[in-house]
Image (cartoon, rainbow, N blue to C red; front, side):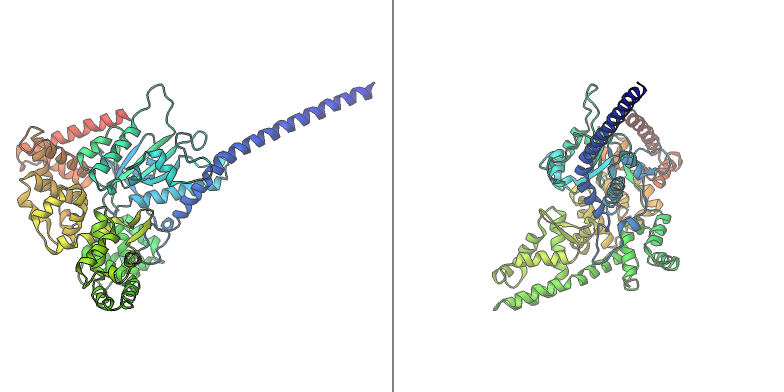
Length: 576
């Protein structure tokens, strides 16, 4: 009897253990299936993002250290900040709600997205699909704003991230309990006003609340852009709290040098050289700082004929053209092999490398086709149209442009590797034939503003010529954009900045019914808000409000500006 009971107990125990083992196995299989689902689905996305972050996004004609090795953490300042130096820009990735990140040309907006996307992807990959080992924060994906011109966000992302099986769907959480963060880069690069309005309206629609009953959306948006016009900012104002990407500080430039160069002595020599070249302020722009490092590292540090940022950029562009000269020579050789007229065309082309690239740059900043522009230019100016003797002339032009490292191939043709450099080239004609009135007009035209900023730097024109124009709204607004662009050393002189701020206050204070009109008053206020995000300009505005030497109307306008700005800041926080 005891043996029978023992057998029954053993049978029950073994059965219980078998059942427990089966339950555990089922749970493990279910967990593995769930893990394999989102992990297997997103692993190709993360691998792509991680691989893209290994290299610096801009090759500049040769080897450039990996972005992960030289990247300097950045800060962002709320557009309506009342004090302080802002926050670590990486904090914007894990906050709540959408974000608009504004930065000047070359300020590092695209590099920030590339760096953070790669870093996030590497962390997700390291977790190997185990939720406890997965990083905190969202899953990052990105696409250029131009992708939203002709299709909505879900379709644009599905095209940008092609996958086997189901397309990427941001309406479903990427990982249980996590959100997508969709980084929409370079809104300003959509040059056509109608197309940019389409993108702005799409983004505004995406930011609208789904309603109090609907479940929270599994995605957020981070949009990057250069400075926008006030009416464009207004489209996004309700759903996108705006931040300005802060400039490099002296400490940031020193940190970049320490990460780039092999020893402290070399880094110090480089920093001393920036002082000797009078580019200590321009290298607060990350693009200019990177170019300065490459010129120094490439042994060109003594080659600049005169100090200043324009001489630095000129030398760098000459280096890029020298690096791509073999491709031009190959095109000339191909022309010479096509008698009778090919040799004459080749002789003409061999001395016009810079002109050819300038033509391509001018087309690129106008959203045109650089290759087609060069083909048309050569047909009009060469001794004979090259296409008549060389049928593959467009392909030759394409190769010449790619060899400069100023352009890259994408699915739609050629695109600028870095718009600031291409705009610097496109500014050549205006810089050589300087006309102040034309410059003011271009500065007040959104699509041409950044070419105009480069033109004044290339022409080495002191911004003091604008003082006589500050009494007129167009002159004050052009000067305000010059201060925001920080492209000319003279624009940093405090007395000049104070004069421009006072002029903007004067034109804004008249209101929409004043003599300058509604649009000009709004643009003046927008520029004041942009400039006040920087502590130095904010201090100048406070000084204007309390300076007894300023006219009473200007002092009152400064005080009113801060009151309106504070009210708007409170309203933005309440909306968030």
